[in-house]
Length: 422
Image (tube, rainbow, N blue to C red; front, side):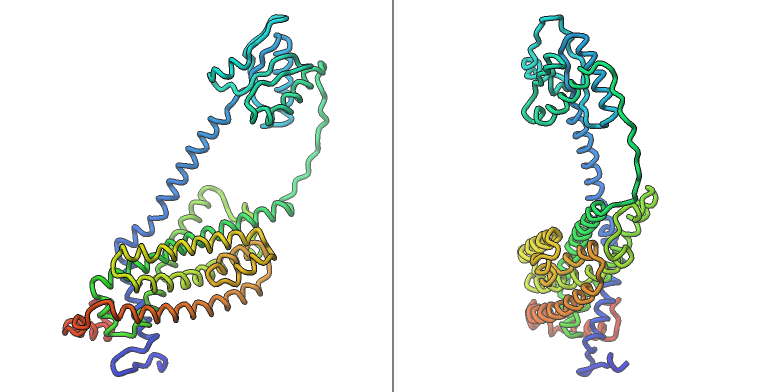
């Protein structure tokens, strides 16, 4: 093919060399043991989150199991308990549990404050007095929460004859405007969070790979065989390919779990562009966001020679990306405002803002413009990053090391396509 013609003697053309470089890195990482552990990596935080959620729900259940004690004359206690049970059938979950803690004789008093301050059992409040004049003793928060409820129970207890509640007819609809809007906003926030986590998790791989090859001088062998711009492009797109493989595995595993549990996408709010188009746009915006951040990380990696330097230099880029994510998340609450349009225009936040827009709006032309805009910035970032990468990596070792015969021999092997031998 003419586009892959060899230039400058024995050196491969830029795109041919980038393809060889990408194929080398992709194969080396895909068939390594570390890639298996990389695929298992996200399972650990998911398991921890599930366990933490279960423990938190159990703690919340125990904390919310508070009772309201009734300390009145015997007939009033029975009337309050019957009223509570009758109202609980009409308003499930709204009426607290009530227990009889004292059946008083006529004229007898009860020190509710001392009982509560003794802090024994699950008693959260005490109702004394009579149904006509109940007295609620509790903490300020409990009083604000239960004052009206206790008044409702007491009023029901003073009526004597059972109240006949009229049956209420029902008419069920599948959704509503409020439910659809709320569901789409949750989908938008979830899509942004997932996109951010995937990009940050996967883009960091290029740093460790680059530092490792700089440390063992492989990067200098590659520099002697192919253009440094091709090394940059090859590494960037190889890691993108590896990321796609990882995402396919994770999505397949997650979908299998959801289907096994009886859940489906129909249980969730339909995104503005539909689920099929939403997934396609999500993949496109992931690629754009990954290439943007990956080019920055590669440029940062070219400045470092050790893992410690990588951590130091990459921290500002990581923190800035977190701020960008929060800015894009804020844009979800300002639909049609200047914050949303600014987030869509800024290159690093544009993928996150547009994923949210795909979940909330049905227009597709904005995504065509956004992808073209992001592609332009990807080209700019790659160009700048490759230039910095070329200048810095070529200075990563002494000149004498690059002139050693063994390095020249390995470079010839790479030019002949024997990437496995490298």
